[in-house]
Image 1: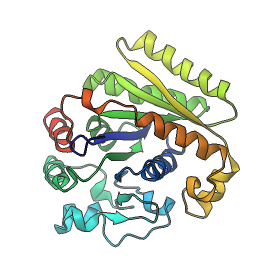
Image 2 (image 1 turned 135 degrees about the horizontal axis):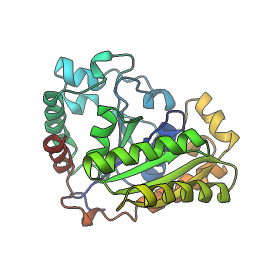
Image 3 (image 1 turned 120 degrees about the vertical axis):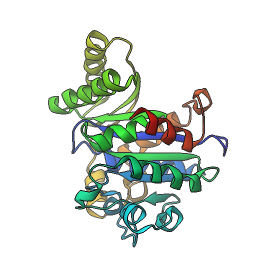
Image 4 (image 1 turned 30 degrees about the vertical axis):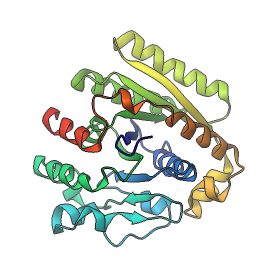
Length: 271
């Protein structure tokens, strides 16, 4: 990965409770273990919990960027796991929808990351609200997380539908989480694929991987540590490592522009 061509990808979902933040944090951990420079952006601005999953208590977050003029470099928080996070706030109604001015402010602040990161992982909120769409549009790749629940499938389809019909986004990666076996993951992906193929002409889905239901994950969440650190030999960790290897094959060079700022600028004029 060239230092001038960081990969910006979102980890997103139509439904809450699918383990999206946990997947994002453990992907960051695995990529960092591969020697990659990783920043994990908590883009669930009003209900942030990346710091909670990692057992961290950052002094500053993105609220301070928008409302107190703090520099992005001051907000960046080191973790014990080899990557950094850009934490957001929780319970702040002012953060639920960014204004155009705040989007521009974030665009300018992202200059600090250019040339200093290989992967920017954007952990979005769930659903189809303005902030979720905003950050998904800003990414080069979108990793949609779903579980074997029917509501998770329908909500994932709804997110893809809005992204396609309202914003022209056609390419999505899919990760099926908390599955009892590989066949269930393939079945869920097939159902989503068929729905998109039938109703959303032009949409392309790729199965990035699946993560099995694993008691080690729950234990790690309770202990506020990545399961890939706390249980490195667990089936869930092995699965996320495989997804991290897949991420490293995504071709950032094929994008129209490789630098982070381009994607935020593209978004500002499209959304």
